Length: 509
Ligand SMILES: [Zn+2]
Image (tube, rainbow, N blue to C red; front, side, top):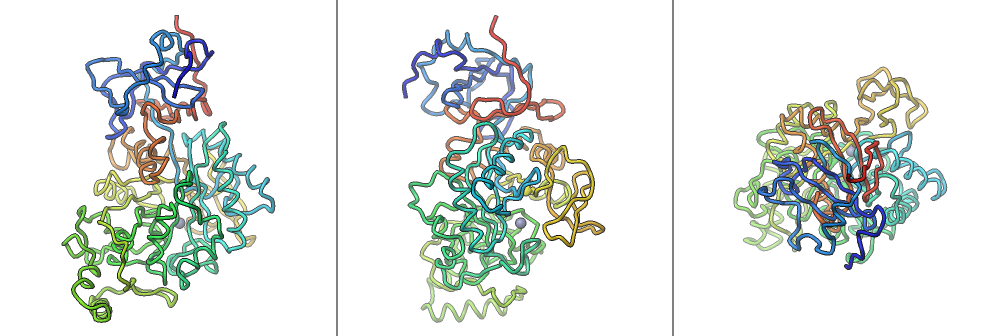
């Protein structure tokens, strides 16, 4: 791409000077301060220069710095002197059900109204450091998906530049285990007894598009042990979905099979899944698997090992017997089934999945958060899982609930059904989850920010991992500025424009 005349395009370049940067691969803070230039026209990071030239510049991709940006243009760029504060990638929230009084699972009747509500959330989320997110829709009926999915699909393609970007959507349900349905409407839970047709019949045609046309990030949370679902995971991956295990009662073998079938994420680890047991560690136990080696210890899937050794009908019988004798009790409701006994042609090497975490200090005990982080830090993805009451400025009080018979009480960070201890959702903004993770795990702020920027981008893959979540030349200029001492969020930028905060540009003297 030819950059014509940077110097004479007014305000095209902006410089952030004297800032510590978060390293793209490690999540460590740079050992010296740096200057980072943004190209407002392209909305990307244009140049990074370490202020101590003896320090390796790990912010430049293999193709190197763009030589068409001359020194004169760099020197003339209006500058924000960050005086030793932290410059980080913008945060990416891959699970947010709503905020600021808006619920993404509620259809107001017209697409225009729905999109306008989404835009309200996008604009305001910037104050929490979020510059990209996936609106999350909980278990709905097919006629609702028919409205909501195309609306999100269309909006994600051309979303606003005045706030956080909608970069896709997250469908949490309805292919969930009834026993782990949580606060989703239980009557909407479904199985996939008709295989792939069940998915198309539920979500509609929008979910089927040629893979190469996908510019959207899409997550589907499902329970792999529910009838017919395991066999559909490879197809979902092919269709561009990040498949996530969640609201599931899967045992260890089922969870491992979901991963070798293509699942690469666990939705809100610890919540809506069986508790960890040392003999049957289940979904949570996936974090403890050695890379390439799981459950039966030889790096092969258990059913794969047996099936390759026995004729198929015999293998099925043997597997069934092992299931019954294994002492592993799966309290499966009638619509759930045993793990797939089909010969899975799509089985892939076992890789530990990413795991999302609600680090609000309420949904998961800080000790458990630290335990998981210490086990698999590179898989940690912070999410808010926020509901419509998420608003840093919302005062404590009693508010209406989805059903008219109840109200919820907001007190500090907690939202409970009034007069009970039952959590009615999460309401802690992502920048606070970042500070919490740093505190719970005793890690530097930069490492915690990494879990809400680079790790989610990696988890989404596709075009997202190549353009977001890292301070790399050529990446989107989605940025956040943090106080190095207190961890307070000072400013947020989307595509090179300030969308939260009041940092001022000064012309170089
Ligand atoms: Zn959930």
